[in-house]
Length: 188
Image 1: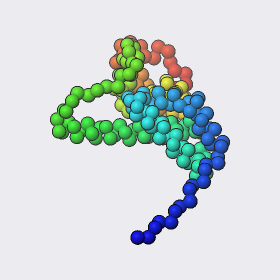
Image 2: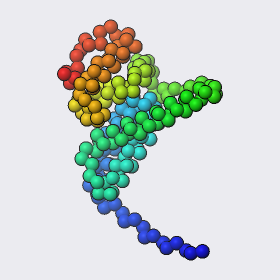
Image 3: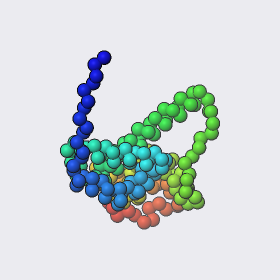
Image 4: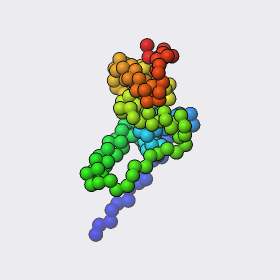
């Protein structure tokens, strides 16, 4: 047998600025992005995995010399895409389990959610995926309509319509008679 020639180790990443940006993101924005992705996908564990994977991909991109202008926005977008992929896998698995018959009852991820927080979370999970995404980005991350449209690659008018429908659905689910009592100025 021929011995494989030993490959030299990869050079260390020397882009200290990129490492500092990622560390700053973790210190300043990580928890909020994880919480936002959690609201969209319904699972803290999935959200943490998605954000960590997105950070790893960001580090790889910068190691290759590709600059990421807005790290927080990039990580959020990638993490949401990863979480969506996971949710699609869950749906496929759920359909397969349904065809095979229920093996055990569904276990909901309710760690730390009580009272009103639990009710809001359940109401959010009942929204259609895109409405849930725009709602989490708007009201949890505090992004304006333009930023949400850029994140999701959709028109601002679509974001406004989805936010309106989401507020109507949430108001009905949570028993709020007048969801537009305090209009959201950023939606205008």
